Amino acid sequence: MTRTRPVRRLGARLSRRSAVGGLTAAATAVGLGPLGDGARGADARSSSHALNKEDPAVSDATPGATPVPTVVLVHGAFAESSSWNGVVDQLLGLGYPVVAVANPLRGVATDAAYVAGVLAGISGPVVLVGHSYGGSVITNVAHGSNVRALVYVAGFAPDAGESAVDLSGRFPGSTLGPTLAAPVALADGGNDLYIDQEAFWAQFAADLPERMARQMAATQRPVTEAALNEASKEPAWRTIPSWFVYGELDKNIPAAAHAFMAERAGSVATIAVPGSSHVVMISHPDPVLELIEAAAAARSSAGIAG
Image 1 (cartoon, one colour):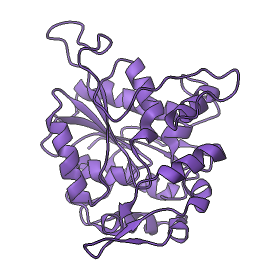
Image 2 (cartoon, one colour):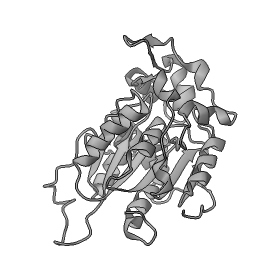
Image 3 (cartoon, helix red, strand yellow):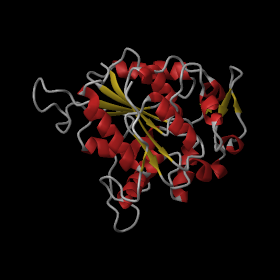
């Protein structure tokens, strides 16, 4: 197990890109276009499709060279694959093949099996990234696969027998429960859960512009109540190195829970982002990119599984 390094609290200066650039990527992620006259306009490519392997920007430059890992992004509850668009745009620009999976949000085992099917169609190494409930999914999908690194973005990293509800309630600070809308009954007797649209901005995305948060609230995808209560199996983070990034003002999963999970998993590097909400990959894409790149670069280092 990799020794956990101290949590790094991100300061005012971002690692490589400006705060304006980060908000521009956030705006692009939900189709709002550039923010302000001075912001750069990013034309984000669709995150719902695998990158064309004929694209010369991501083709292996030299036969026999170590292949560039494919970055597979798994969104969480109350979100959708477009929540990764700002990150996808920058990853593509850096030459990584990218797949943003449409996570079914039906159940941990069911969703993990679906993502495993996606991974089976990818040749070469994979950096598997999960946001929120998507962290529970990547924890259960990576065994025996081509995954070489796990990146948890404000994501659950459950141990065997734990559920998302268990972990979010273990430490004080989550205010998700009271913000949920009336459940939608399903034919199998279960329920679909949404965040009430009027509560979504403050609960889920408080550090984004209101117009952006309202658009996200309107397009959110539901998760089943059963999925959030489903117990995890033996975790992949025991054998695959992991990286963690989360917002210190996350109201869905308390920061203390994130810190606990990162420490327990033996996180190679952990970044806590001051002022960030639950959607750190939209409001602060730079530290997310930083950890994904670190995980990709470390894939062939000593001690990396596989």
